[in-house]
Length: 333
Image (cartoon, rainbow, N blue to C red; front, side, top):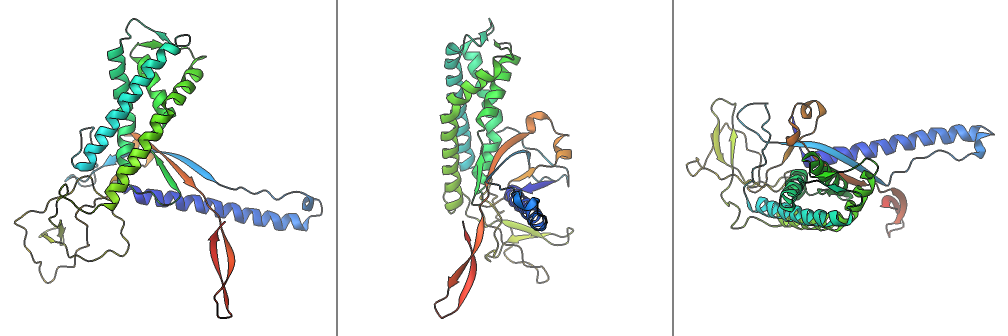
C-alpha cells in the first residue's frame, strides 16, 4: 500500500511528539515520587529532551495502474515533465562531480587503497557515476516534489551512504582493494571531500522544490482542467472538475500532469455527486514504506531518504489583551 509522502512526514512528526509527551508524563510521575521520598528528593529527576531526530526512511515509488491493489514500481526511466528534466540534469551533474573527486582522491590515498590492473579511469568513472545516480536519484525526485513541514529537513544526498556504496562498487568490480583496517579512514576522507558537493546538491534541490510549489501552471504545464472519473464503478462518467477551493489541500505539485480528453462531456448527470477539486498540476507521489512490502521487492527498486526533525518546545505565557483582561497562549521557547 502506498502513502503520500507528505502524510508520512506528518505521521512521523506526530509519533515524535507523542514520544516526547510520554517521556514528560513519566518524568512528572517520577518527580512526584522523588518529592515524597526524603532520600530521592536530593537526586535530579530523569528527563529526556529531544532536539534533532534523524530518520533514514526506506521507500519505493508506487503508481496506480489497472491492476487493482497490485503496485507498479517505477523503473529508472527518465520521467516526463519540466521538473523531471531538471532533476535528471542535477543528479547527472552531481554524479559527474563525485566521480571526478573520488578518482582524483585515489592518488592521495594510494597508501591506503590499492588500484588493481582492472582500474581504468574511464571505467571507474562510469562505475562511480552509475552508483551515485542509483543512490540519489529517487530521494532527489521525492525531495523536489515534497514541501516539508517547518522544522523538517530532507536530505537526498546522504554523503556517508554515497561514499559507502561507491567504495563497495569499486571493490565489487575488482578495480580497488581495501583492508578493513583502512576502510574507516578512507571513508572519512571521502566524506570530507564530498561534503561540499552534497550541500550544493541539497541547495539546488530546494531551489527546484520552491519553484515547483510556488509557480502556477505555465506553458510547460497543461492548462486543460483534469478529468475525474466518478460514479458507482459501472457506468463511470468523466467530466471536468468544478473549481472549488480545497479547505485543507494535501496534494503536492506533480511531475506528471494529466491532460483531459477533448471529447469529455461538459456536464454530469444530476444524480452524480460533486467531484473532489483537484488542481491541474497536482498529483501526490505515493511511496511504499511498509517492511513486509519492501522485503518482496528487488534491491534496485529500493531507496532511502534522510529526514531530520527539529523538535521545538512551547511554553504558556500570559498576554495582556489591553482591556483589563489577560489570556494565555503557547509561544516557542
